[in-house]
Length: 322
Ligand code: BTN
Image (cartoon, rainbow, N blue to C red):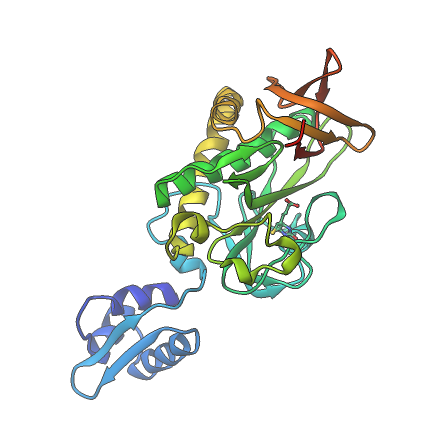
């Protein structure tokens, strides 16, 4: 018996009798009672009345798979959700599951104890306030297309935020989401495969959702932000995640059929990078100049010292004092 089914049967706005529940679920009344207890342990508030039965009072702020997928019609992304209360890192868990799960599987944790960021950094992942997830993909793309897949992942998030909260965070190349110079989310993509072929891709996404400024460690307080800080109200994480999975699938299917132009155009239109003086470190060289374009292959074009350079991956810092 699926717990999600029990929740939906309980959510009728009125009391539902134990007998009714047992009939509809095709189980005994004792089994119904056990399921009610399990749901209570998971944080659901359920009233019980000796004659009238049960009534769902409230749902917890948890990303249980049956809550996230409620009404989600996706064919691939999030059809399977591996949910954990706590993990060291969802990317690490996704790596362990890589060969045994279907494409589109999402690994999700309420908190991470060793969340990983880009360029060997850590990622602050406290319980209950953010969304920490990894999506497993087996795309028929060449490794050269990875920068575009990175952009696609952040474009989908910007679209999802617009759908859920009616404001549009900007895309900071290569794959961050910004609002008023604060970083709202980051993406760490990890790949495995042979030369010329991407076998598996893990798209690890960290979204700061309901943190307030003091919830961040002091060293992040000047640069990190959350959707709650940007929107000025508490954000429903389940709804946002559902919309993200929807937008991701839409964007991914579009890219599979017609290429990445739609995602690239979105990045160029809603950009936090282009037209700004920046410092870009691609791991080999540091460029100081202006970010002038995103090329069709996803590279960032920097104009510096009278010439143009292409950067395929790296870290971009805005330069305010030029
Ligand atoms: C960055 O440095 O901007 C990328 C941060 C990526 C964090 C996410 S949270 C879910 C997934 N699991 C990890 O360990 N990291 C990514």
